[in-house]
Image (cartoon, rainbow, N blue to C red):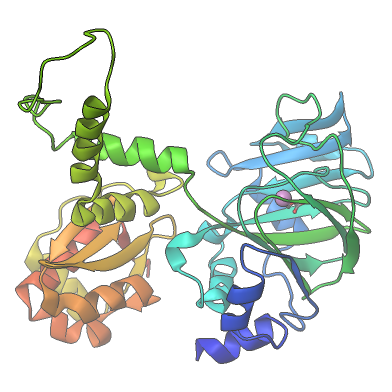
Length: 389
Ligand code: SIN
Ligand code: CO
């Protein structure tokens, strides 16, 4: 059960209490959230990933060509040979998409909506290394994976908080430390959005950051209205068939505002469109180039592959979610939505949550035309892929 798993992860606090008292509100240090945790990836392997063209990586050198120098990957072997002994950090984004054992960590966080989770970033730092005091606009769980890191936390910040004059990094000009802890492997620190924090490596250390995503109000408004606008014909306009003679032809009066408010309210309250937009938006892949359309596969070919033992896995870069509307179910897959009949509910749940799809767990769905079409379409879209074997 998720509840048992989360009880240990949250240091004896239930998921309900964690969400009520800490989530988005205040930090929580959990000693031995994952007792005996060993990183499935070594520092060398992490550095190896940072040499790859399609992996997003950064290096932060406290005493580089300038204070807090930021370099962007991909790096080379030589980059590492030339780095100083200490005071630098390597950060590699979305390691969960390339190392399946890292992706499995998400299973401990099933008490949170999966579509809120962004990715698992892993940092490796030499003694003294860190990215400076800063704040993020997202919740984060910082799991210590190797070595020791000192975390200091400070004040709540916002976009008015003074920053150092630095083109690439948002480092706080003032950090008012309030508490600090040294985290050891298996320890975890939860930080709510906007809380100032400053991590420095005590020795060679590796930290996993499970980050969350939350669209800004500005993103919700601009993206949703762009989405809505596609469905609105040009002739639908501000209209004032109820207009009365005006006293001052230069004044914009309340009646005009009321008509605008009515127009906005009419469109903004369309729940089906709001949900469709939101599901598409929240499942957009971070790296869309990793979710590419596969060659068309005809139904017979598809069914015989499955019956011969082929296994389908979620493309690690794909995001999936489902929901319900008055006229059926919606499946969101990597930025696209599909309206599906209600009898596919259990299939949608399976597709979103199952580690693997195969003849056993798909059996009843392959006899159903909507079911087999859906699974095949997800393979063609690139959200599901055949496991190599
Ligand atoms: C790090 O792992 O060094 C940085 C993580 C963070 O502060 O968000
Ligand atoms: Co941070």
